[in-house]
Length: 467
Image 1: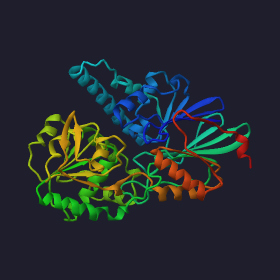
Image 2: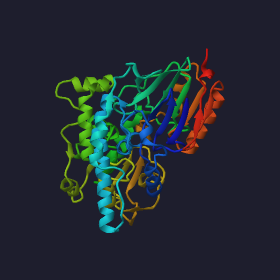
Image 3: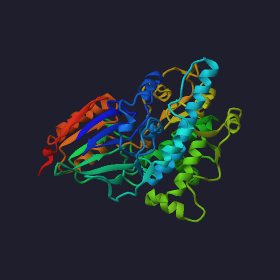
Image 4: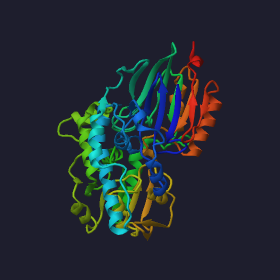
């Protein structure tokens, strides 16, 4: 078998990993690069492999840094099946269309204002054939992909529909197992079930987003939110919460519902200003089988809906969004994108970031070079739409919401595995990935640990896995 890494290698985005085995080529994820715009744009144009040579794609989940280049892959000639879960396919219906529309709008803007001749990576017309190639598989059901390769999806507990991919392989008469974590979730998060554990694997490809960090306990997040929200509401401010349309918006809405229901914060208006988040929330409502028991019971109780309640309004039109700029606080806006790079939240920040009465509540990971990271790093001024704005609004970070496993969660996952011989660490900034590799090498000397660079390949001899 040959393993090659073409994205999320010593960085967080652009997940793409290729397996060549038994004469077939399997692509694990096909994500878009995010962050520094010019550098990301250059990397997104070059897959570094021929799309026509890929036989199968296995998609771990619907986040854009894992799914966002699938339409380009299809556009360039990939005609095989894309294996994923049912919830992931439904989410991709909205996520990929939204991505295509953003690209088309960006191109139109550049042509209008800068006269640049640019092309989108793909258009909305490229999304439909991509969706038609998706084949859905339930969790915990073994599926024969091709000769000598069987696939099982386990619940990764990261976002709705996210999966850990287990490949049981027979090569040259030797049986062995490869496991790809995708993005691994955390225990105890609201809404979703905890990640499943893997008891045995020979090869592990694991994420490392928080490979050397520890999250705050999620149990205390409601107390923290109660305090910071009440302060901002008391001073009459607007509360801007940049949140990914997928998962983070639904988690935030769940907690706002909880705090208002319990009378711990005032009944102020809440606007979810993201058409994509509205569509994604509909997918959540359609998949209660993915929920943990607490949220499932909440859904099943009479007249209850943790994603929709009296003070909450989902906005769709541009006019509705713009009207929020003229509205006086206090009120709450939850808007995409989560890293403040695209979407309506950028306009809300532009209009509100200079007012010290306002609050910007950061509830998710912010990649390097993004506007969100600059806010987290407390930069006194930021550039938005080409203009400089002084950051006078209060900026508060809540990292307890993170849907990624931290160092402790990752170590627990690895420690449960028996027979682990090779570990490849991906999907983490270089310092996180290399530090986690060092820790893993010291605590698990029985496994060889690699931190691949983009474009690096490894030949794996099945003889190494003979019993």
